[in-house]
Image 1 (cartoon, rainbow, N blue to C red):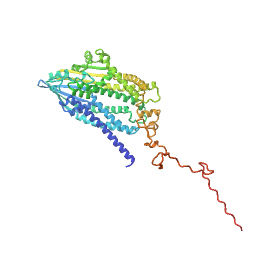
Image 2: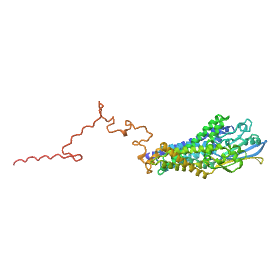
Image 3: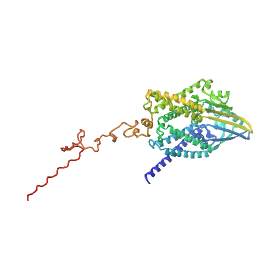
Image 4: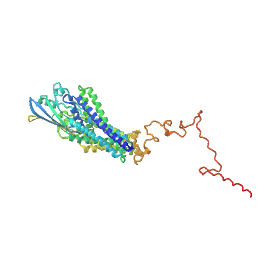
Length: 543
């Protein structure tokens, strides 16, 4: 086998192993979080945990699940139930996205300062194909029937029931029991079976969009991963802002989980609070971020689902359905709502400071540097905020009929305006980036956490990428290396300092070069040697 063939085989094996590690670890992590959350919620007491876990994972990556059910009431059969739910468990999705992106970015860092476009596309394509294969298997396994018993689950209104379940970050919106359970038990004599199945086609399309979005976000926010030639502008501008915004959003979720742990310690059912936090903490936290940045939401609620909404949102939607939900309108009913914009503003300022610390400073002054940070963070936030609005939309509709008579109806819908989110995201990002850039410049933190690839492109003046003169090497060590030591670095030794080639000496006097040989008279340095004089001819004899 030639060297070229061996190199291609090694690259192919590395590509395949990376795809297997990224997709399999992501699904294993999502399945573990989903199973643990469902178990803490007590869902495994109503049905098989395996199919429910598969269905939750499919929902988390953009899949579609179709529920259907029947109810036995008063000893008669023939009742039908129809339920539609459009809400993704973002706690499961976040774990899978972080792990898949981390493995993919780490595999790129081993390729050097740049990567070819064809190889990058091949690596991403391998991850996508394997991801969809595993997702198809889960779609086939995610079908089952669940029998709900209000008394066994301890729902409100049932015999021996406890308090409703609250999802941290959503307040009373997490009360999944309430009047719905009371009316269902009164009508159905405490026995309801609901079947669910995963729609394979829509689930694969949703999974394709999800995994491509995760890989794209990874490329835009992984500051130390290489990029193809011609993409060096991402190192200087987009990647510092994208990584900063990603960090503060994850930090907000961690704060929500910490609040859930504190709430679980004082609750009568700590397992349910912990399970709800594992599955839905990002839903509540990331729903509050657009609302706190003054993005208007459109809300509609009817029936017993009004009891699931937090105060004062339930009072606002009870007045009239299908209206805008904003901080100002909620503050008319509860003044403490103004704390939400203050927290979101502090979150954006943190993103601005992180952007300035990760952006190369270069030769720009305070005004130019802060303006550059504001423009990049504004552009990134203008794209990220509409994505949060789309990811956190809530839509639920439940109807129940017995013997053809409509007995109960409820609906809930919360969705934000994507155009308004884009405009407000640009404004908030610009202001936060400028303020964070000025603050970082004044404190000396500007550019201190910039990645080596970003520093290299700025030092090279945006020229050819990569420029070897500005990359770390033996003559130009990076800032993270230990101090230079000539006794261990052969490149820093002076001629004659090699202990293995020096002559043995007994004194501590320094080595001296041998004396030069004396120059010949008439000899000039660099000239050709003077030939010796010719011998005189022999004397001529007589006769």
